[in-house]
Length: 397
Image 1 (cartoon, helix red, strand yellow):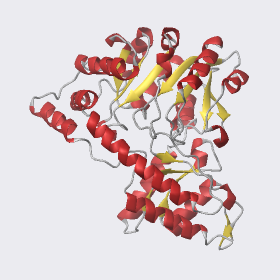
Image 2: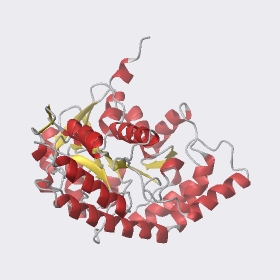
Image 3: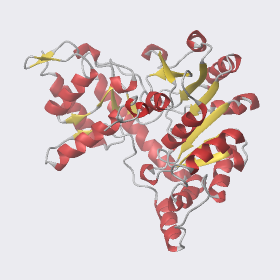
């Protein structure tokens, strides 16, 4: 069997692989505590579920326009105006089967062999592979915990070549929980415009912010920035709707047209039932979202306090998303039963085998020193899980 060069450029998602392995072990009776999942552990709010049920009962179960129903596009337009002070027309919106699908679409229609795309690291696992599948080259720029894992305009300018086409910004970030201030976004936007770079702004975690952090979309800085940007968002994270598979992008109408053409020849429309439910999510669930965020902040504080009690572990305090990204590199070089821990992959496997805790190795995000823990889990799970990590690390010599 011969496989295409394109498919051989990419690897399976490591976050999904960790989650699958943990689920397999649980199915075999092993008591595993999972910190790997990238989804809220809350139920989808009742209002949204009822809207989905009503869609079925009223036979909203057929094909829709490829890029989404008009009512959902209008709800997205209204959301941008209400939440982000951004003004789009409905022909500048494309609804897809999740934010990942939106990113995949734009990569396929905009980038090709020879193009370079700047990706700050740590990065969401799928960015580099989505870029590679399009034939382009991800240019990875490392950031530091001391700088809150944020890329600077100087780093961007230093990475630009004649082939550089775009930069991806993810704020708040998966995996670090870092987020950019308005002033920092203004600096990035000015740099991108001066270097003629398209800005791809992944804002899927925009509502999940803590400690009064004021979230801004880079697209809201000015009309020129908005015209030179693609905004990616969706309902998965903020509304606990990961399985409903609705994401969307906002961009100039020609990009939307070309991405819609690709979608029409691949998936066609997003699920009709999910589209209807997403209208309710965007219009009528602010109180549900606030309750989830309040609980996430309590969990953030708990997991951070627990992690920082482990000797030699360092951890940035996330201001958004539902992840911590502690530095475990002090344990590299230690051994267990003659097996040396040489990096994040080996440490993650050791913690799964000996601690019965599933974490995602930092190498998946381009950061070998770290491991990612999701705090989309109950308080008891967090406390018990970090206790297991602590006891397992004590076994290393």
